[in-house]
Image 1: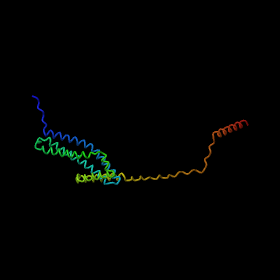
Image 2: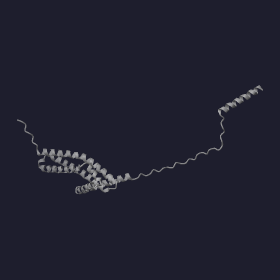
Image 3: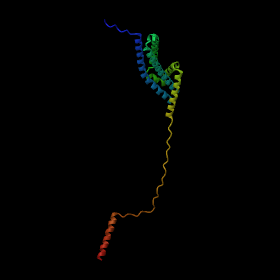
Image 4: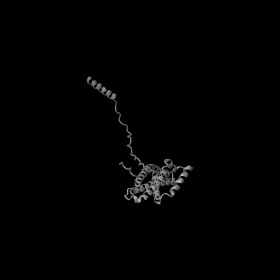
Length: 217
């Protein structure tokens, strides 16, 4: 007798779907980190220019992207526990509904993966860029919780303080005056001149001649 082919159960399919979703989520996490880092930098640049509105928009979008990842990660973790449950048959419907919701949220995350060129539009001033900013602002209006909005305001305040500290002129270091030390007075009297070597030799020679003449006398 040949071996009968293994039958793929609904639980096996759910486990496979769950793994696929988690792999996609990890890919999105790596990509979105690049975007959120740039959005933070844009918010800092806008605050330095005094454009608080665009800075706030960049931080709100960043928060929305981060909350999508966190929500999906928590949901997949819960589904992973349900999928491995021995009572899978009783909760099968809930598991597949959860997977469907996970797929939906992953599509939302994928829509946020427009690349850095879309992020750069957050600081532009052309008509197209301003229209894009308005579209993002309206989209975020119904998707960010009050708690997320509060956290965005806190992050904005922290960035404002950071930018203000960098722009604040450094206090001048006081220069200590160098004390004036009085110099000694230059003496008015002339110093006795020192005879040169030739003068000394001539004087010695004359002295020897005088001694010889005295001896001959």
